[in-house]
Amino acid sequence: MGNIAGNERLVRQTISQYNQSQVRIPQSKFRELLNMPHNDAEFTGERLIINDHVKRQFDKVFREHTLRYDFASRFVQGNTVLDAACGVGYGTKMFEIAGAELAIGVDASAETVSYAAMHYAGERAQFMAADIHALPFPNDSFDIVVSFETIEHIPDGAEWIRESARVLKEGGLLIISTPNRSRHSPGIYFGEKPHHTFHLFEYSVNEFVGELLTRYDIVELYGQTFVHDYEWYATRLERASRGLNPEYVPPMMELSYDYSLVPLSRVKNAQPTFVIAVCRKP
Image (cartoon, rainbow, N blue to C red; front, side, top):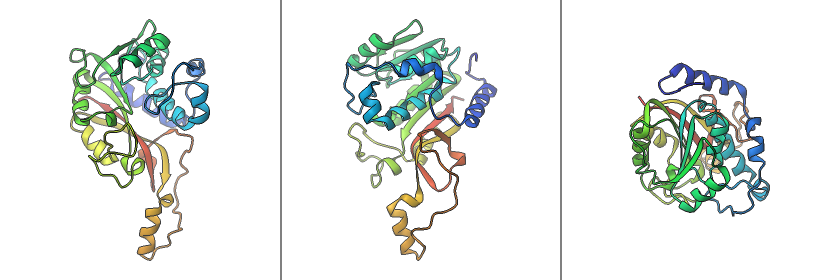
C-alpha cells in the first residue's frame, strides 16, 4: 500500500473498496490467529480475550471487536501504527499480519501488556505499558493511530484526541470507535456514569463528531450493531401521543445484523450502538 499519511487518494480508494465489499467476517489471513484459543486468562468484560468460552458466550462482542480491527488493517500496509489501549494485543498482531511496517500496542495495564507480549509479540509487533494521555513518543511519530473502545474509559476524551493528534504525522489517520450513548446508555446525560461498569462517560454521535472536529477532518463515519427506530419503546410512545400509528414500520434499507460496519451515509431510521470514525490530521 505504501505510506498513507497525506495520501488522500489512497485513503479514499481503500474506503471505497471496503464500502463495496459488504464485509461480514475478518479476512482469511487472520483465521489462524483468531482461531488460536487463549484459555489462560479470564474475560471480565473490559478487555477481549480470544478463547472458546468467549466465542460461545460472547460471540457478539468477539465479532464486533474483530471486525473493527479487520477494517483498520486495510490501511496499515507499509505504515507505522499505534494501537492505543491495545488490550491483550490480538489487534496489534493483526496489523503485523496485514503488513504494517511497525505496529506498537500500548496499554495502561502492565499485566495486560505482559500478556500481549507473551502471546502476540513479533518482529514488527511490539508492546509497552503507557498512559495514552502522555504517550512516550515524539511528535509526528505514526502514520496511523487506532483507538477502539478507548475514549469512554478515560476521564477526558478531548485530552486523548489532542494527544493522538500530537503523535500523528501530518495527513495521518486516526481510526477510532466509541459506543453511542443514545443507544448504549439511554436516559443518561453526558458526564453521568453510563450503564457499562468500566465506562466513565459516553458520547452521543453528534458529541463524538464535534469532539473529533476540534483536531481532525472526518473522512468517513460508520455505524455498527444497529437498532431500528421503530424498535424503541420511546419512539412508539411518542408516536402514540401524537396520534400516529405506533406500530408503523417505515420503508428503509435492510441493515446488517451481523455486526458489519455500515457507512452512516446509508442509514436512515436507525441508530448504531457503536460509531467508528476515520479521521485525517490536517
